[in-house]
Image (cartoon, rainbow, N blue to C red):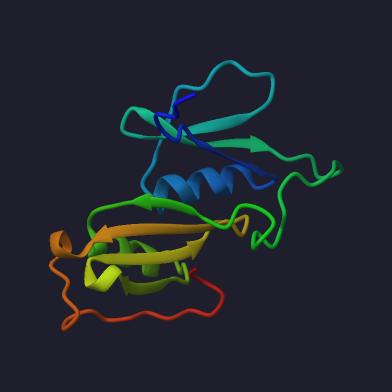
Amino acid sequence: MAITELNHINIRTEKMEETKDFFVDIVGLEIGWRPDFSSHGYWLYCGDVPIVHLSGSDPEGEPRTVASGRGAGLDHIGLFAKDLSGTEETLRNNDVTYKKVLASGGKLIQVFFHDPNGVQVELGFDADHEGVTQDNFETVDAPGLGI
């Protein structure tokens, strides 16, 4: 077996429309084609790839995701992005609490926040491309976010 790519992550949610709107309006993914499954859901695309799938969670059923996400399950979703200043503006305008750190010796900017289900999302930005240096970087701290 030879893995060639990470195809998608699936989030089960009772907050389907809120979660879809969050990943479209805040993260910048696009709703795209999804097979005609018997259950409601969305496939959210980055370009031509449906990287986030949303499916319904049965509130009466057994949980399928560890709520804490730390040590025994999914810790976070990591995506690479462009336009750090636009991203921060979108997060602020939508009252999304986030943490911003400079990592990898000043080469990588990491922005962490939670989706409506409590799933942590990490957006990575190339510091050089964003015009960020260790001298002009401004940290944003938020308890409970980050790795």
